[in-house]
Image 1 (cartoon, helix red, strand yellow):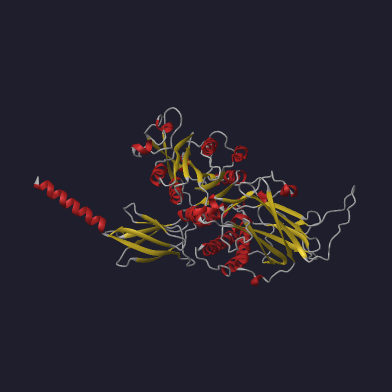
Image 2 (cartoon, helix red, strand yellow):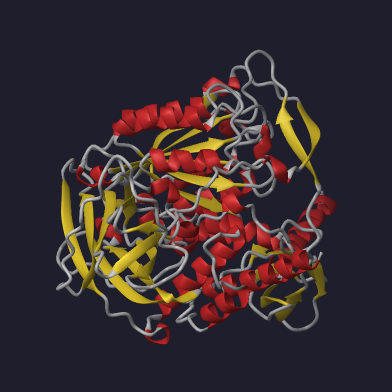
Length: 631
């Protein structure tokens, strides 16, 4: 008995010793090529399950056992590095790039089931209380698990084709009309390609989403309205004979305590293709970040889908974070992908818990690879258009690579009164779900449209950069039944027009032969006006069916490029970079060197490091482009 007591005391003492003897290591990770900090780097202690991720400034903090000898650093597109721990608790680490294209083998797990395919909803290894979160699943799930080996194939990604906006003559079309777009998925997806040593497909590059990824310092509205309009005019960096107009919209912000209650449905893809580390595991971490932002008045339900869709967690108060997080953690990947069924069930649950004065929204996490039931982009557009009448909005969070279906998720967001973000690492998840929480989840103005009327006495031709899938007919501007994009709390939206001034001779104004059967009527032009254009802005309050109108006129009084704001110059640099990545026929004198130089001079107060990261990406793309040109 004494020996047993002595053994227990010794074990307790050792246990206490192990728990108490840890050390905290902090540091910063940089790219060796350019010396810029690297966000999103995985930091792990080999032989343990302890890990951390570098923040937007490349900094990390990790607690490791006293006996730990090394830390390992890994980031896509860079060589893995192991650093030996010495006496210092502060590290500075430099990672070397590796442009070798990734073609690894990924192990995908899935549950084998009997009867209907319910695999992938709840982990077979989860505690019993987690496995019974949904009786719908537990009745038929078989506990045996298999693994299959699949080769990642980047050619299986799909992107909607883009036909670039061309120059339009003011004589033939004085009005340009489009819907706003607050999505930013294209930029983080482009970043993923470049970080893994590849140039992105041209159709993956949506210039407006790249520009709108960044925060711009625009004044909030002061007239009581939800959105303020700001403009700037200068020369286009890639063709100084042309003008570049920036239209900036800034949505108001509201104190977090005054936000309406939220009725949220997390719609999570748990099919076999979500097994990879940058898919379902990253989804879980991302959703837990969102859960931390919830209040007692908020409610969350969880719907998961693989071969079928089911309710994993009924609507639960936002203060029951442990219950919600347990439900999230219980999910496991496996089976086919009935995305359409998942959407239908999520909308049904959202309607059943609808808050009349609240924020009703689905947060969908998926790689978009639907393969059971309605699955085409057209099917999704038809389904989502029907469901949006429910007044339930949708936020699409895209994850993963290889079989990523960008076109499908863009359709869901565009047609479903929603927004779309691509989450490639935990830092991006923090940006979308914590830093930009209000903009992601709370609509402040809906059906937001812009219409620009150009004065033919001042403007010969114009071109809107990006927004190709957001163009509207001129009649749609005054049609309140025509759906358009929404803006969330604190959102900024930037649109750039390249303008050919009247009297400039170049190849972009265009001309056509005189008509044979109609005689051209003379156009009466008011040459006494010094206005270059008038911008009309139309929107609806979130609970209204009737739009409101405001407008502003712009004079032909451009600033010198160096006298413009840092935001103007940075947005222009991003647009120039986007045209180069797309191989745009309108890039004119654009160069990587010019875009990088412009961005370096317009970093401004880059507290979060996103602009520095852009410069690093542009320099990497320049190197790859030079290498491709030399072959």
